[in-house]
Amino acid sequence: MSRWHKALIAASVGVAASAALLVTSSTPGQAEASLVANYRCTGGIAGAGVDLEARMTPQVEAGGQMYVRWDMSYKTDGREFGSPGFFPKGSSLALEGTVDISGAWNGRLLPRGSKDQPELVPGQYLELPEGLSDQGSIKRSGKVRFKPGALFVRFTPAKGEVMVNNKTDVEYTGGWEWEYTQEQYNDHLNDVQKTSTHGEVAKLQFIGTQVAYIGRRAPGLGPIRVLLDGHPVTDPLVELGKDRSGKPVIGTETQVVLWESPKLDYGPHTIEIVNVEDKPAYLDAFKVTTGEVGEPPIYNQATCTLLGDPGAIDVTIPGSTPTNSPSPTPTDSPTVTPPTDNTPTNSPSPTPTATNTTPNGGSNDGGLGHVIVMPSATGTSSGSATPKTTGPTATKYYKAQVAKTPKGGVDSGEAPDRETRPYGLMAALVMAGGGGGLLLRRRRAAHAGGVL
Image (tube, rainbow, N blue to C red; front, side, top):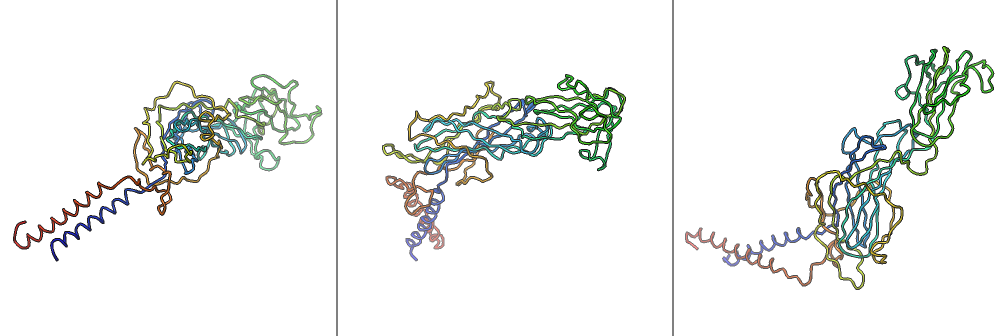
C-alpha cells in the first residue's frame, strides 16, 4: 500500500470524526429557563414570619403561546402558614404572583393557584398549591423579558360548623373535671366537662361568625352566665335545670344548644361561661360557625415582600411574524439578568387589579388573551439543558425554540443559513488529512531505518 493511500485513509478518519462533532453541536431545543425568587411573608396566617421560595419558569411554544409557572415551597420546616381558627373541610389557601413582561410584549401575567384544606384547628399548617400558572398569546416575535414581582397570599375559610371540646382548645379554671360518659347520655364524643363550684370559668377564643354553648339540661343543675367578647349577654341567666319555658325539667337532655350568639362579623371573638352557684353545670362543646365569606377576609391576608432582586429571564418569542416584519433570529439560550442579594425591599407590594390591559398600545398583533390556569401536576417539556448559575441561585437554561423547521429535519430544528459557508470546517479537515499522512510517513521511515 503506498504512503499516499495510507495518508488518504487517515484523512478519511479525520473527516468522519469532524462530521460526528458537527451533529452533536447542532442539536436544537426549546426556549425555557427558570430562576428562584425568595419572599418573606408576615401578618395574618403568616404570623411572625414565613419564608417562601418561588421557582419561576416561563415557556414559549411555536405560534406565540407563552406560559409562566411558579413552583412554590416553604423554605424552613416548622415555619408554615397556619390556620387562624376552627374550620370544616374545604377552606382554601390561594396564592397570586405577578410577572412583569417587557420587550416585544409589554404587560403582566398573574400566576394563580389554590389548595383546598382538610378540617382545621388553630395553628395547623396549611398546604401550599402545587403550582401557580398563567398564560398569554402573542403574535409579535422578538425578545421578551420575564421578571417576578409581588406575591399575594389569601385564606378563605370554609362555610360550616365545628364542635370544639378539646381541653387543649378550651381554657378551664381548676374546678372543672373531665367525665367519660360512654354512650349512656349521647354526649358529643361521649365525654363532658363538669363543675360544681361557684365562679368556675370555661373560655374559648375563636374566629368565625357565630358561636353556641352546648351542654346538658337536668334536674338540680345550676344557672350559667355567658360572656361574649368580655361582655355579659345573658339576662336572665341560662337555667340548666329548666326548659326554655322556665319549667323544671324531669329528665336529662344532652347535646342541647343552651345559648347561641347572634350573627357576628367575621374575625376573632371570645366566649366564656361562668358557673354562678355551687351547683353542678356541664359543658359538652362550643359550636363555632363560619358563614358564607364572599371575598378572602383581610384579617387573614399575609403581606409578602420580595427579598432582593431575583433577576429576570430573556426569551426570544418565535411566534407568528407579521407580514412586513423581519424574521426573528433565535438565540442558542435565554439570557438572564443577574440577581442581587436577598435584602428585603422597603417598598410595599402593589395591590393587583382585576382589570386586563391591552399591551403594546392596543395593537392587534401584540394583544394578550388572558386566561387563568389552575395548578396541575403535569410537567413541562424541555430540550437539552446547559446548567448555569446566576449568583447564589442555580438556574437551568435551555436552548431557545427556533422559529422555522427545515424540510426533512427534526421538528424543533432550523435549517442552517444558506449564506454561511463552512470554511472553518474545510480548513480543519485539510489540516487533519495532512497531519494524518505525515504521521504515517514517519512511522514507515522508522521501520525502514531511515529518517523522514
